[in-house]
Every structure is written in structure tokens, then in C-alpha cells.
Image (tube, rainbow, N blue to C red; front, top):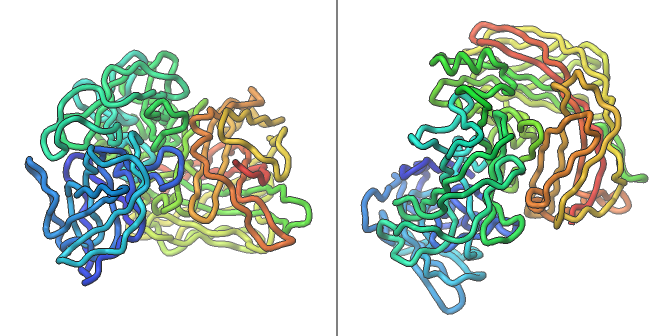
Length: 546
């Protein structure tokens, strides 16, 4: 499913051959957050933009609504929502065979209902819809619900790693889902606050000056002040609506610096960030070797999961918002991957790299180990992935792993050695099969660690899945603290963990682990401004998030 949704008001154009019988593939999603139905912060808010995906739900050539009054029929596509005995027609913003973007009228009753799409007089089978009073989602730079938020300063300049906010500055976050308005959603909306919101910047509630419509139907803006003491290239920003703890659609990030126009903790390094700020194009290669040192439930199959990942990405000043590599120290992000996370994150399950990965570096990246392994292109040119020795552990500490690339159309041949780190950090205080509630804060504890690795930081990773939902949380914290508290409003994003495997070898589909990234080793290649390789050993355990 393609979840592209361009910012105001030009929407993604997806084309597919129209079918006689329209089909909606999944229930409707908030057009900014794409939050999976059933999870915290999900549901379609009254008066908000939503998206449906399918086949034959509109014309093969996409049609966009450009002027008021907006209509309930666009290009022959209509969408009906029924809650109880009330049926309303959605206001269509964009219609194509594969995707329809629309506004749910503010008059729609709150509650469980159904939705259908009609095109060329043919109506789809209904899908469920949950209408809520408020569930805000922030638009993001990559139009996927995660990464750099669409946020602007007072001059409407986009916030990125080369145009940062500063503590005390005022910014505007753009999204949809604050709730119903009193006027028609087909006309320019009235101004005024809509609903009740709490805006978290990092871990701190921010001062909110305005939360309401922007002047365009369905599009909300939240004007807020950056709290003191907050800095980082990837600081999470989250909007909780209705006074309901955890009612947060998504957790994008903003870039904040104490002074100047650039932030200082990007994995690309300050030199490349400064080049972007100076108007130059940057081509960056990132390779990561990763080992999950698993503590399995006694009696279940054991073993490690070792992986290799690589991305080769080009950034310009106008695309600097796509340069996403992790979350800044002291903070957490949560990512909903139930319907996919994008070409890179679908495979990595890790916010450590959410770059566009569009530069061809050849047909294979080779790793010289025992036995030799390789990383091959996955989904999009520029992203390489591979299991390492699927029958057992592959990565060992203090060993040398040469990695080489054959070279491609954009990136030439290269070779670099990764000398792996020593996994000294150990998760403590949590036991196999432990039930962990998501209704409050969670303090994660560890022992050991190396203050010379990852700039003295530790990475915490938690995930939970069941038959319909998959979500993960990633945090970065000072290693010397020996503990870190994941706020309850973030933890609430995790779905209840299912049980995997077959009796007697079952296991919880919840997981929590800690690790440290190794010092980076640079490498060069024709077509790259620079590249780095690193590794991480995670120490983790299976749990049930409930």
C-alpha cells in the first residue's frame, strides 16, 4: 500500500486499471498519521482528512479538488459513511483508482460504522470505520507518518536539520484530526480553537497558542512554543487530543538547536550537515551490522538473529527533511508498522535509518565472515539487506568483518572493515514472559555499557505485535544513567502482544532490548560525499505488553 499524501492540497497520484467492482483494501486511515485502526490514537476524527486505498475506487487518472465549495462527487467517485442510522457523504479531495483522500463531515456521529466507495455506479463491500471526536495526526516530510514533521516557523519556512527551531521559538505543526467545526467542511472553515490538546516536545508539554483549522478544509494547525532545554536533530513532537492519555496519532520529529541554523547530532556528521546548509548536495552511505543476543523463554527454540543493512541516499537542501537517522538523546519515538513502514524500515524495523535510499551501489554488498554473506537490494535501489548466517550466530565481538560493494550506476566500488564492539550493556529488572502494562510509565534499567560508544548513549528498542498490529518504540538515553523512563503516553502506542510459535514452543510477540552503536568507521567511494559503517549488539528478552 502506498501511503503518500503530499502537503496542501496536492495529493499523491496513484494509477491502476479501474475495475468494475471497487474494492477497499483496508479500513480508512488518518491522512497524516496512517494510524492502524484499533490502536491508541487511531480512528477518524470528525471533520478530518482520511485516506482509503484499494482498486477501482476512482478514475485511472487521478483527479484533485482545487476550489470551494468542495464536492461529494469527484471524477465519478463518492464515499458513504454510515454510523447507526445516519449516513453521510464524504467530501472528496482526490480520487484515483488506487487511492481516495476525503474529509469526514463534522456532522458524522461518533461511534463504530461502515464505509463504502462508489465509482461508475459500482459500490464496494463495506469496511469498518471508527469515528472519534479527535485523533490528531501530523503530516511528515516523507508522507508516511514518521520522521521529520511538517512544521514551519513564523515565516512559514520548513523546519529541518538545516533550518532549526530554538528554545523559546514559536512553530506551527500541520496535520489533521483536531475534531469537528460548526460550519460546513466543504467551505473555508472558521478560525478558533478546536478540541483540547497537549503538545509534547521531547518529553515536555509545550505552551500552545492556537489549535484549529488553518483556512483550508480539514487541515489543522497547532501553534506552539519550543520549551527550554530541548535540543536535537530528531526531537519527537506528539499531540494528545481530548485529554485522553495516549490518544496520539503519530510521533514525528522536529530539529531544535540551542543557536544557529543547524543541529549537531545527525549521524551524517556535522561536515555533511554544514554542506547541506551551504546549498550543496550530499550523497551519504550508511552500513549497519546488527545482532540480537536473545534471551529466549526456556524450552523454546534458541538462537540469534543477525542482520546487515545499508542505505545510499542523496540529500539536497530542499530534501534535508528526509535525512532521518535515529532519535535524539533523552527521547523516544513510536512507529506504527502494521501496514508497512516504507522501503527501508519495512526490513530494518528500526528508526536508526529512515533515509530515502535511492542511490544504486551495485547488485550486491559482500561481507567476509564465516561463512561469507551478502546484502542485496530490497524494494528500492539504494537499500541493501540480508540475514547473516540464518542457522546460527554470525557476528562476534572484536572481530573484523570486511564489507565491499561491487559498484553501481550512482556509487562506485568500495571496501571497508568493521571491527565489532564488545556488547557490555545488559538489560536488567525484566524477566521472561513478564506482563508489562502500557497504561503508565515504564522504567527500563541496565548494567554496564561503554561511555566511549554512541557518544555515551544507549539505544532502547521495544516492539509488540499481534495478528493485526505491529508497533515499535525506539529511545536514546545516557548510558551512565543506568535507567530511562519511557513515558506512558508513548508506551500506550504499543498494541497488546500476541503469542507466536506452536506449542510447546511458544513465545511472546513482545520484545524489549538495549544496545550501543559502535564507533563509526568512514569509507569513500566514487559518487559518495562520505560513508560510515557501524554495528550494534542488542541484549533483549520476550515480554507481553498488555
